[in-house]
Length: 374
Image (cartoon, rainbow, N blue to C red; front, top):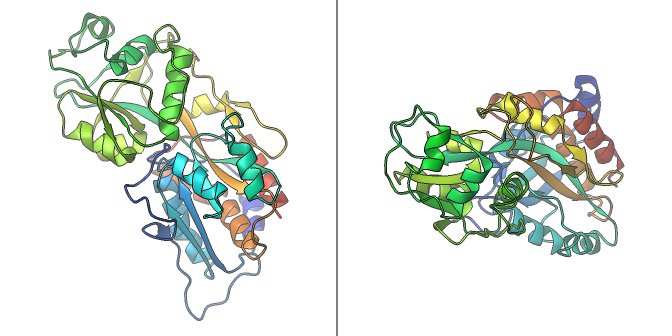
């Protein structure tokens, strides 16, 4: 049975982002070196609809765990097709895609027309549009290292002022007000931020600018705008920094916080504290609005939501692809892999490792767009 037929029979349910986002490993080499791959088995037949050959991709580390999970099982289904993914960060992924160095990119922010990314991508696609396909989604954790404080509630303004360096110690009255039962120490707060260009940074700044506009006045961008703290490369860098530093705090994909046993703050946008779970993060995606046209499926998230039980700091990782213009021999491999990534079975595997739910209606549109790639 073909991959696309399997997708239609199975339906679409969940999508995840992993330890989501504009992010990557510390390997900044090309997509074919140091990334993950699905390998073909010698002497076996290749499904007619899978195509054969290899794809190179790079970008978001937020989706690193999810795409590696999908790549691994895709290799069993499409034995003649190979996918290599190098998690160098969203900014690097877009640059490499637009330069024609990789076949698709992963980014935690959609292509930005104002920064010339849309035009550059169209040129790379032989004067055809590039599409943003939301394939993975995951929450950004405000992760901390504070022994003895198992529960921490932060409001948007307090969060912004911590990362701006205006709140300097953990027993500051502004933090204590929201945590009356916590034994907050006088430990100095040590901020860690992404030093590389990161979609996770841009999404976190979008949250701060939207939910705490009186405190965070800087235009969101992939480059961190704060002036205090210590910069570390990639998601692994900031999470390692907090893990080794008592009093440390950062913004990072949930899976990295979990892997490093870091505390994760509950966020109170005004509707009460919300613990970060797959379900609470998924609710934010249900309310996302379409922001693209046709098969360009970028989404607008509501970072100011006060809906009860909704975790507001969520990012979507897009696979950025040429609608047309990719080497014709690679198109069957690309469409087969993307369709496989959007099947119910694959997405359930991603959900099992802690990622947020993407609405069925969105993944249905993703499959329609995949079918239109040529």
